[in-house]
Structure formats: C-alpha cells, structure tokens
Picture 1 (cartoon, helix red, strand yellow):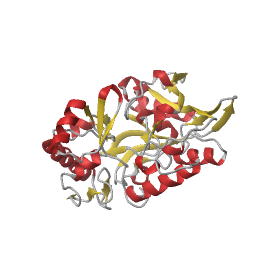
Picture 2 (cartoon, rainbow, N blue to C red):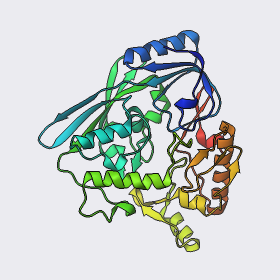
Picture 3 (cartoon, one colour):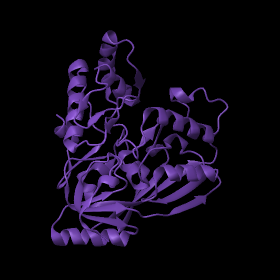
Picture 4 (cartoon, one colour):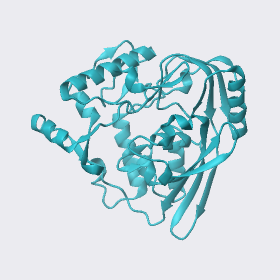
Length: 343
C-alpha cells in the first residue's frame, strides 16, 4: 500500500525531485480513513492530493501523502437537466471528453485542465468564460475523524475567483470524495472569451477543439515540460486603480467583473517587465505564456520560488500590483502561506 521515502517526481506536474515518507494510493474512502488513523498513530502530517497539478513542494514532505483515486461516474436526468455524480479521483479532462461523447454539454469550456475532479471545487477552476461554480451542484466531503459524509451545496461553498471554503483550515479534517454537477439540457454556448467569439454557428465540440488549439499554443504539456499551468492569479483591482493605470498604460487589457471591480491580465503585467527568458537555476518563464513557470529539467523548489519572488517584485515595483500565486505551497509539515513565501 505504501513505501517509505517515496519519490514524488512523477506525482507532481512540475516534475520536481522531492519525496515523502509514505505514499498511499486510495481507491476507496476506507483506505483514506486507514491512512488518516495511521498518520495520527505515528504523529505525522497528512496530505490528500489528486494529480498535484496545482502544487509546489518546497521540500520533502515529512509525513503521509494520499493520492485520491476514488472513481465512479453516475449520470441521472430529469426533463431539464443532466445530473452527474463523479468520484473525486476521476481525471477532470477525461470526464469532460466523456460527457461530450455522451451528448452531455456544458463542461467544454473547462476542457484540457489537468487534475482530478476532487481538486476542482477547492480552486473553483475557471477558463474561457466558465467557472466551476457555474456547473457545480454539490460537493460530498468525508470527515476524517469519524468517516461521516456531509453534502455541501454549491451556494454554501463560497465560491469566488480561484477560491472556496475548502481552502479554509477548518476543512483540513475533511476530504472531498465526490462532486455533483447540474447541466442544462437546453445548451447555450459560452463565447465571451475573445478567441471563441468567431465560432458561429458553433457546437460544444467546436469549443472543445478550439480550446485545445488555444491551450496547445500557450501551455506546455506537463508530461514533457514540468509546469502547474497559470502560476499567478489575474489581479482584481478597483475601478479607480484601473483608471489610473490606463492613463500610463493605455493598451493594458482589462475585464469588468462584479462589484465594479476590474480584472487585469497577470501575463500582460509580467510581459511589461521584460522577464521573458529570465532564468533562476533550472526554472524560467515559458516563452509562449508569461504566467507559466517551467522546470527545464533540473529545477529545484528554491529555483521556482526565487523566480516567482522576482516576478512578484518586478510587477509590484512597476505597477504597484502584488501578484498572488494560484498554486498551493507545501512544506515538510503541510501547506504554508504562498504569499508570505514570495514576499
């Protein structure tokens, strides 16, 4: 079931050469509970992962890591909607493709995002005009102390930009075991993203295929080039701040969002700092997309950390905007404050 001092190199998409004391693959909730009890008995830190596609390990993990591989796809329907109940260990992109094949549409804008179903509510993943909150019905979690299952409905998840209640420390004693989705049978394409607006007429498969082309141009395959996708969040600023910046940078892209706030493009901000081609050890910024920090093959966690810190400082000094990581930072004893680590 597990091995001491296991390498995590193939279990983190950055491909960093780090390890953990114990690595357990859990195909059911009982195995997760056993691993939790084992960690308590040994007084070791405990961490649940999917595919570690949004994780930066800063050092070897001094405890037990469980890879959640609980599978299962159940599809129900009523007159208006498709209802999906999906195991947390299912691969997210494969689920999207599977549903399209079955004629169930609504997830296509979120195609080609790496990771497992259990990780998507934590981050409230989003892409090309759609966020997880738009299609999520509920999240089933298991309390690790007693094995009881609790259903958290979407309106209770406090979903916001790349955030949810599941990032709160209270939820460290819970694990996501399944996620429910609700998709309207009367499908409406979401074409708000500029690169999709030209698709007319359009099918869900057209969107799926176009997003593949877009992502292929901008994001390297982590199986070939180690990365975690977008490293930083797109910053959200006040309208006043955006107006001031536009006086000095009139070509700055911006996107209105709720509460009269403005979302800016982190990639554009980084590009303006002339950081393309900047290396720290074995890490650098991907030459096709400034939001992607890559492992060129021999990067250490400190290389990635130093590069992220340099980016944040350069953007902060130029624009007075301090970027925040999307990525979870993990130290030997567990998750730490990512902003503090690069400040």
